Every structure is written in C-alpha cells, then in structure tokens.
Image (cartoon, rainbow, N blue to C red; front, side, top):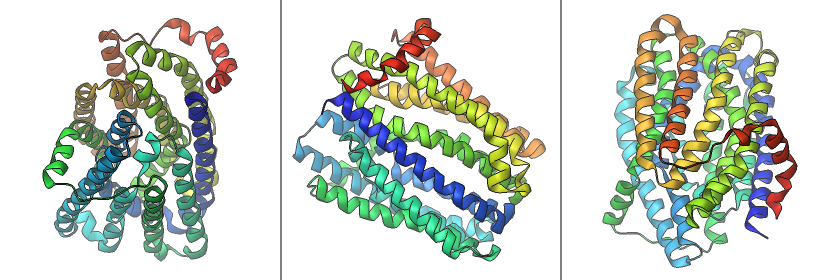
Length: 437
C-alpha cells in the first residue's frame, strides 16, 4: 500500500470512529446534564480543568516530538526501543513529580478542598497519559489502533453512565467513570503496542531522561502556555463566578471540542507524520504536500464551522435541556473561534513543528497566553462567561495571524489566492481520490 493511500485510509478510518465516538456524548449528555444539573457539571468540569495541568505535564510534548523522532528513525527496531524506553520513563518521572505537587494543592487550593474526592479522581487521569502510546501508533500510521482505543473508552463511558447515573449525588460516580475508564483502556493499549511492535522496555540512564526532557522543553512549554489561555480561562471563571456559570461555559466548550475532535484530531494525527516525512525529502516536497491538502482542509473547516453556527442552539436545547439556555450565546461566540483554531493547529502543529520552528511556536504561544490572561483577569470578573468566550475566540485569531506572518517571512510559499478560488476548491474535491495514487 502506498504512503498516500495508507494516509487516506488511516485518516478516514479514524474519522469514522471519531464520529462514532462523539455520538456517545450525545447519548450521555442529555442524561448527565439533566440529572446532575449545571452546578455538579460545573464542579466536575472545574476539577478536570485543574487536573489538566498535570495531564499536560505527564504527556509533555511526546505526542509531537515522539512522532517526529520515530519518523526520522524509521524501522530501526533498536533505536525505536531506546526511544520508547526513554519516553516511558520520562513520563513516569513526570507523573511522580505531578503527584508530589498535587497533594499540597489538594489541601491548599480552596476549590479543590471543596470536594477532595472529585479532585483526586480527576488527577488520576494523568495515568492515562503515561500508558498511552499514541505517538508510536501515529509514527507508524497505525491510526486504527488509536481509533479503537478511543472507541472502547467512549463505549465504556457511555455504558457506565447509562447504568450508574441516577441522581444528583452520583456526580462522584460520574467523575470515576469519566476518568478511570480511559486509564484502564490506556493500559490495555500499552500492552497491545508492546506486543505488536515487539518493544523492549529497559531502564535508561537518568541523565538520558533529563536530556530528553530538556531537549523537548520548548514544545512542552508551548503546549503548557496554550493551556494557560484555554484551561486557565475556566479556572479564572470559576474563581469569580458560581459552578452554574462554569457549567454553562464548559458545556458550550464541550460542543466545540466535539466538533474539533471529530474533524481535527484524525487530520492532525494522520497528517503530522505524513507531512513530516514529506519535509524530510526536501522543503519543496513538503510545501507541495501542504498545498495539496490545504484547500480540502479549508472546505472541511468552513463546513464544520457553519454547521455548528446553525445547529448550535438546537444542540444545546435538545441535548443539555432548558437549564442550559445560557450556553447558547457562548456557543455562538466559540464557534467563530473554531475556524481560527482549526488553522492554528494546521499551521502550528502540522507545518511549523515539522519545519522545526519550535521557538517561533513557543513565542506565539507565550504572547497569546499573556494577552489572554490579562484580558481574562480584567474582564471576566464583570462580564463572566461571555468575556471568557470572546477572549478565547480573539486569541485564536491572533495566533493564526502571527503564524501566517512568520511562515510568509520565512519565504515558505504555501499560500496563494489561486488555492482558495472556487475553481481550485472544486478541483481539489474532485481530485481527493488522487491521494490513493
């Protein structure tokens, strides 16, 4: 099977399963939102937002840098085993560091003290990051395994919600299902990857672990900073406003995340190693690959954003219920930002990182985080969730503007008006099957 055909098959299969995966939330959301209500939904989502900092620390940047290294290594089994061991023990070290930091937070941070058990359960999601081997599946373009893992986790979560969520006090059970099921599935995924790729786990020198962490720190810091203007906005909102307000915002954000993950995750996971391999053959080859994909990507983005803008209010009313009507205006604002974040991920994660523009990526993320945090602290206390939504959307458009400017200044010619003409867009759709050649 050719590389292009394998890419198309991988993205398609992952996309189909992702659609199935996100049908499950539309089964569980109406049940959970009506039983638990905005207050308990806000409580669980707020704890998850805080725990996400530690999830990011354990994940580090290996889903990007691990893929990049593995693509360059190729099929050298000895070097793959060496990389696998270094990444695993680096993440194990970071998990221990996270635990040491989290325990004092559990007793010092007012919100976490509000419900110790939910906060600790949310933290256990970090274990999922340790055992997930998505970086290796991506590098090998074996996306069907990632798809299967996600499908299994979502299926079990849905079954758990249908069986065990009966009253408002079951929010603790909901937190357990939401966090512990993915952990269990990730351990199974780890065993599958270990056997399929005939991996051998060996304890690396501590100096090698620190070296890997140091080398990948720029992309990690970029990802952490990105979280500062996304996750921290929820934390700031919860600091100044009630759990209900947090529930309205996180519910609207949930719909946006579903739309993003159904379309964007399969593309990023499939295109990152594909574009990376193209750039290893030369800048011109990589640019040509980007130009072939960009028009189709544009059409998909516009379709998803327009669909969400039109259907969003109905989604909120049908799946969350009348109690969440305040989420509708928030979703309308966030859906505008979804257009920018699609291209942010494309130009940032797929193009810039494959061109080793890590420092530019970090600088953009740092500027965006500072911009977002300042505005959140200034506006959220008075204007609440609406300010959070507007700031998130504005930040995403600023990021994509800077990314495009930097790529142009680096004389990397991936843009032209012709690519986005109606004639060329229609031609791109007709020629989509050419990826199989």
